[in-house]
Image (tube, rainbow, N blue to C red):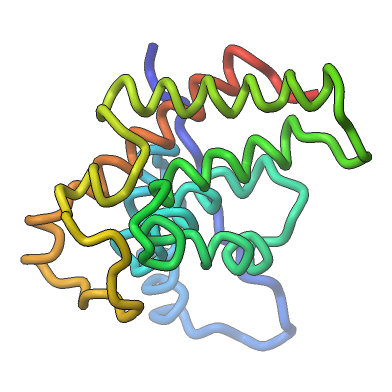
Length: 186
């Protein structure tokens, strides 16, 4: 099934000030319309410097009832397997956060509603694990260290060559997009 394409249109508000024609042309070339899949959007956010969890959450921003900056801040602690502790992969945590916003509950709960939501979370984890063998960051990266230094590595071409993170993030976006198609949010 082909991935749904996102169309991002950026509009320049009329401020009453004239925009020079050459600047308008350059702005249109830079901004224009961007047609991406959610997979591509998530991977693009990661390449721009957002962490794995933020990249997933922001790729689904248009579906969520929270402002972009708050989504980004909410997900900021989950990169590198939760603050580089190398525990649950940030892209998996990102899927779980979106699932909470789209399908979660907001009242005290101990019965069927909670069980149904946890079943969704376990299904998402299973789909990711089925594809990658684990949902644990250090296992996905082949690291022996349990808790890593808090300082992230610089994002260079070498970094991207040795890390599977962009692909993991792209796969998580595809998994969640497919999940939403199968389970439309109310």
